[in-house]
Image 1 (spheres, rainbow, N blue to C red):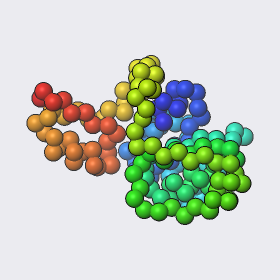
Image 2 (image 1 turned 90 degrees about the horizontal axis):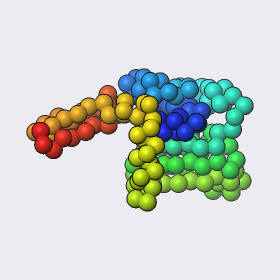
Image 3 (image 1 turned 135 degrees about the horizontal axis):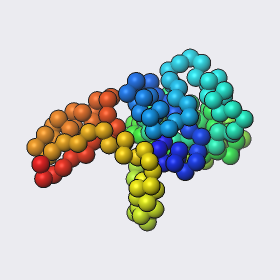
Image 4 (image 1 turned 60 degrees about the vertical axis):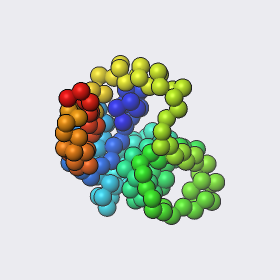
Length: 162
């Protein structure tokens, strides 16, 4: 989200966890919505204003959120799933992809050839430093893991020399 905003995108962030909702606001999301709200689709339509929804990224791995991305995407848009989901998501190839012309991308990693450009963008972003919410010494790796698995952190850094 921080990189998308830095590159000039209008960002509609969705999260139900209060900590993450606040982080999205702090990092510049234009609109932050709760995906569990029964009126979320209408609120997304209102939030997008007259601009088409052409890109979506789901990092949650939540099947309902992934389905929401597909449902809300405009024709010829792209959806990227980067969160682990070992369950199934109902898909109708004709309605979801062929007639809408959607592109679905899944990625568990990034291309090493893109590394330098990604780092350059991250270094220039005025808010990317907020992504690192916690730093632990290696002597407390269990504490770091427990913090990371909770819902009140973004990225946790381990310092192997401490």
